[in-house]
Length: 159
Image: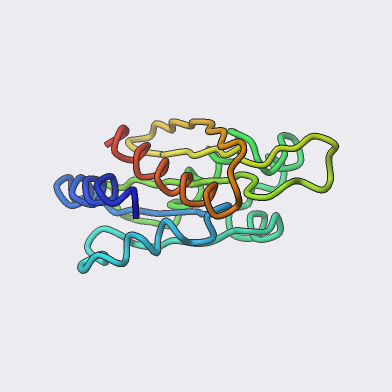
């Protein structure tokens, strides 16, 4: 994949800093984590990952129903809460979490096209950074791939 160098750098950073990684994926459907586990030894840095694709799963696993009702499922606030909540059951002190939410396809419940709007949040050392990406005029697969690449890039910037 075109993001291989970013992926390798991210994994090296996790290993060097002895970080445990927690991931909450929505728009990418697990592709980010899938890329991580292609490299042997992923269990040394990846503790767990979940795909919370539906709103219901975000409510049940992450407890962020109110945030979604207030801000909408594709928002910086939801990405931040996903990144914060995904690692709450972990007892590790040295950890990082990353989350993504966005629209890979045209939205059917609004009049405006929001396809390609993505939010990525990284929670590290009790600080959460969130970015908004806009991948307009891209197809569904391209948006997902670009989101995965942006997740590696954002992870590298934070750690």
